[in-house]
Length: 461
Image 1 (cartoon, rainbow, N blue to C red):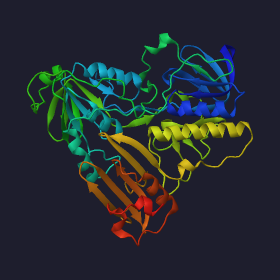
Image 2 (tube, one colour):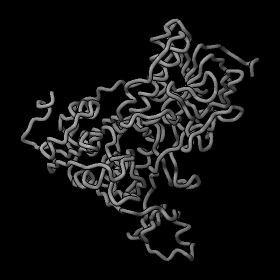
Image 3 (spheres, rainbow, N blue to C red):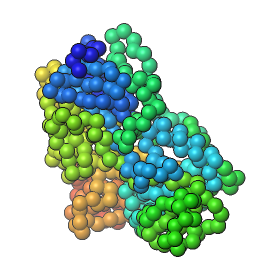
Image 4 (cartoon, one colour):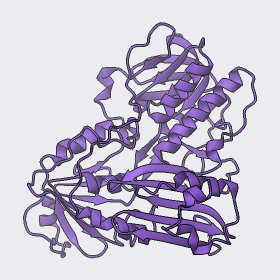
């Protein structure tokens, strides 16, 4: 492999998602004179040989490094790998394939209850959606049942026109200017070939549905039916449905469909295709052979509080890694776009500090969990132990709900705020963030803390 080396770099980052891009930004800023390479299309990484400090791509290119950061993300957990009518949405290519398939669809079945599923069922128009969730409420990853009930009416309401421009930067790859960071992608001829279950591109960001048309073949605006507390028992093609003597459940709707989904609640639905949105698995396979990476229970690469893996000079950031340092009581890892960005930014700082022989402390962003997104056209802010994760019965909840406007939930432990869910334009995120970080005793205020007639933002200013 060494004979084929094309160029050596001070740092190589594998993966062109938000973690990889922000890592490169930090390295380019802090090591302005160093050669830094970003290798995208991580499905085409053939091998990483760390004892030789070499990366080989599927098209035969070989790069040497002093420091390596793996930002290869995660891949969807598909319901099945061998069904042509099952689609996972994880990266730009799969989102475009979904758009293409949706344009001809009359009905789809969406399986899953996470962020992608929540965004999908709201954005799709002109197509009936059957939404199968294993929980007793939608959005169980982010919300309690009360918040879910607040959001449900939006599935029946008309979608408002969007007039707010996206303020987040968008990243593309292009030829590097002299002295700038360099980007390498897999050869164009290898991109069309499947690389098995590890094939994936950069993860979708929070604005993934902007700029693409998610419209089906029907004239109706949208119809969403939710099937609660059920999972997929079996998926049949139309031929298998007709030829299977054991299939006794009649579809819940008449007509001929390319694929049928049998649910554990006994119902069977025909549809044009199935969207599998049931979580992700860290994309570590391209890097394990010949190396001694320590893996966490969830399959991610274990990293310490400097984002270093168990292999010397190898870092990891984003969905591919698992934070194995002692966490702050107010922080937990969730494989979200915002956390991938924070990890990539911090990994770049750590790599630069090691090169410059500087010391660095764990970044403040890991002190308090925070996530801002949009679901069902509502601004959603999640802070700290927003769902009372790990608190058991030792907590109390304060809730304020104004139908169609806002939903506010506060998690208290020992009279101190440890988490919050804010849905709508509440303008409380900064105040609550400070109250959580300061751990001020709020026992005196009781339920008045959420009194809508009291401007608590001004009160605690």
